[in-house]
Image (cartoon, rainbow, N blue to C red; front, side):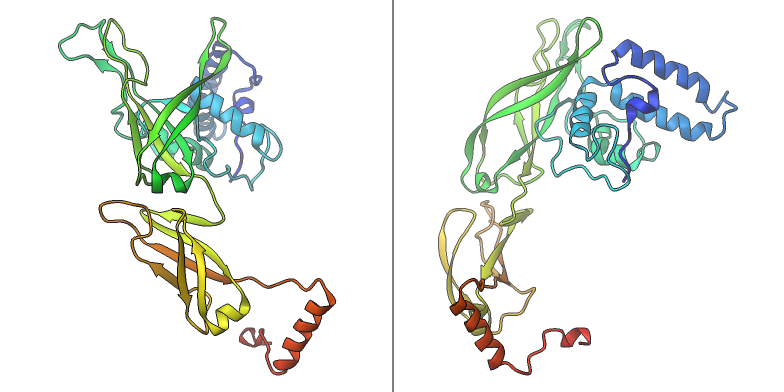
Length: 330
């Protein structure tokens, strides 16, 4: 996937004001609008201009895009064809709207880059949009809902937790320059929370108008990447290293689960790669808990001392006909 330099597309500086972005967009729209333009590939160029404007004219999307650009391999203007955003890159960014944002956007109008970054937040039912309070006047308007993705440790799903979360947002100052903002919230993480689940904080969205209530804040849960385990719905998969003799001969080993419990499990003899041990109902807690699957892999002991090297030589001598590459035609 190619990193899109939206500032280059509109021909504006990275510190451009909102007015400068608007003027640049209007100029390019007049040039490339397919109804009037005689430029080659006008429709494709117009789509690129529209996409860039969709991001840069929205302070929240622009702030998140700028942050991603700074982490790109070659800075905000780079990344090349091999660019991929890091996992949960937008965690902590607060956006207007509920998790599925504003309706009416067709994914075919946007590049893969845009869809990867903003697709979920750019389409949907729009149930987070501001609306009039029931029975109120036009001046009484409920605040819009906001949403943000947050990163939690998988262990938080086992026990619940109290977390202080920092959310990043953005606004335009009086001169139209982008201003980054940050706020902190104390949040109770419920036990049994799953990835993708929404935690609703009533009244933590945008303030209402004319005395109408504030909107809500929806926090979409993502688990931090962890080499030890991963979650799929309520099931959890845990990587467990075993010694070569444990894998071949079998036997009891002790394993510490994501929930903090130490359990004894029996590894069957002649363990084969790809098999899993299932610990029933030791996944994410719920009325019907998930399961914990132990994915065992062989860890080779190092040969650093002379005695350890001799032990490996003795093992090689004990298996003179063993050829690990035979299945590959060796």
